[in-house]
Length: 395
Ligand SMILES: C[S@@+](CC[C@H](N)C(=O)[O-])C[C@H]1O[C@@H](n2cnc3c(N)ncnc32)[C@H](O)[C@@H]1O
Image (cartoon, rainbow, N blue to C red; front, side, top):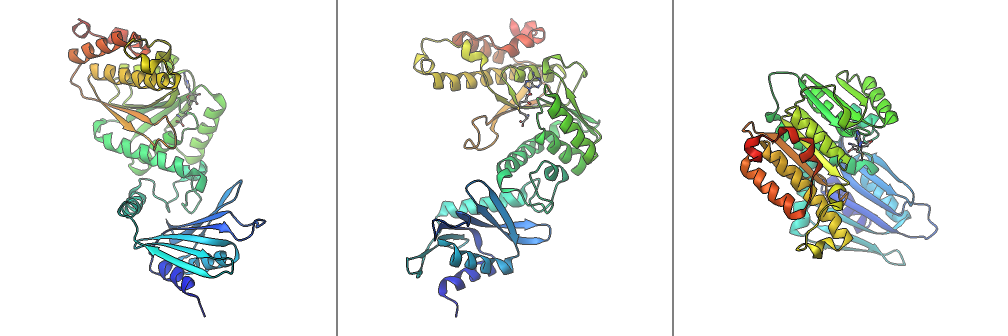
């Protein structure tokens, strides 16, 4: 005869109500089992499965199990390895505890409003992601983010979310790109190029747009890897080149410039190129904004500037504020967006600039000048674009 807790697990799984199950607290200290197992629904090409994610001290493995077998698997794990479990379901949070004699207690409580909302949100996000789980995008498989079945590797969840977030932000501004000609896109400081491949996949493969993408980076070995992968995937309009952003002279115009985590003033070099090429869209996630840290000086701000950490954060914000304002001076509409959750990386600010075609703004220039003189700074981007400041703006 089955016990109540076993029936409960089978019922939740059969009704499709399980949002997440966490099995924990090993029964034996010397157990070779995973210290924790997390179970979640995943939509794969061949239907809904429950993904068992096994957390060992030095690795995480996972296994996709058909729903009809998943209840039995959880019961087996609980009988053999674990003393407790928490099942978050659509209707309740159910806790299962075994005492020393192995007797089970079930506690059920209403999920909090926010937990339920978060679960719904997660579910909706999952459903609406541009690169959905369950559909294996070849580049994600090659880059080790997805399995051939379209399941996302446990350790690559953050990268997967970041790529989707980036594509969402690109999708928002696609109407600002020219529709009547092939697009030229440049990714400066492309590194391993997850996002460059993602852009190509979205625009050339999914949307069948005529595009050419260039990825540029200083590192020859990384560029060779990326080019090999582009060739393998048949992405024939995706080219990778070795070079320094500041010295790149092969183009006269580009429609979109991307620069993600290009260090310090490498971001400014990329922004300057983008502006000079008349790029309609610029997507830039700056990092290592050291330049103004060495320059910024203000008596009034000494409570911030006398603390190294605060000064560093303030300088980074001031750098990006100056960049954003200079782009506005030149007629770009600028938004500062959160790129990925701050818990994943502090480098989470994305400057999205869309050319408005309305020309420069004297008012913005004056705002910039006041900001610059108040902080006693001399940002590289202003100097890199010195030939662009029209007299009407500079007075
Ligand atoms: C932190 S990695 C980011 C890579 C990739 N964009 C990403 O977000 O995953 C920064 C990359 O910028 C490249 N880089 C830095 N300065 C550069 C420069 N002046 N010219 C070209 N590439 C540069 C580095 O070689 C490195 O690969």
